[in-house]
Image (cartoon, rainbow, N blue to C red; front, top):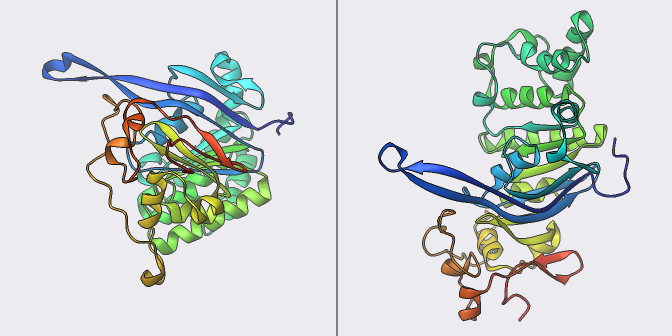
Length: 328
């Protein structure tokens, strides 16, 4: 477990750009600025929610933290270790401590493997158990995530989407990790099943002392599971703080717009809907200044917003925002 007094996961000024080829025979080279200078940390046993619309860089950020994608610059430290400085043997050992639950259980489970085989694979690869002991541990894991007896012999196509996602969670837990990146783990599920999986993750965290980076586009889901949230837009964190504080008084215009789109039981008591103009800018050609300024609805928007990039600044205890106009 975490052997330091500091955060379990530390991300500092992380940048991830990648090249894509477009045009005839890929003749044109474009640099996609997926993640642009992101900084945050996750403490042991904590859940940090990461929220933003599709294409903002959330998944790339999660993959970079796990070293499944190459960084351009910046630093990721896990339990004090520089993740990008590890040699292959040390990285292999670290893989046990950091795992991922993917968005699409259909795509993340091999259709040619039974559910039991998918969960067992990690145990064998890392030398944790073999033979009858591996069988016992697989059955215990499947029971822990709420799958019925006999599930280990079934194939992914023979069970429901919620059960496939539970199998994916069991596979991630098999190697006894401390930190899970949950990348939109309930977005492909029915609402009733979403609640069951969220409650399962909360129970697992309490039992196993896990830390989560929980990625979602749904602020209602984030509110249910994460006491702290970072709001991401076009590769940058634009607001960061306690979830209750951000729900009660969002400071960034983008967060304000996101919150007005969250369904409420009584629409008469909801916020007036803020409809953002246009589409998000391209990460290939991000705008100068504040990345949100082309869509910003703030009446005080001025030339500073169009020319100077705002940095995160604290306006309340633990509540940071990257906006020139916030607090005015």
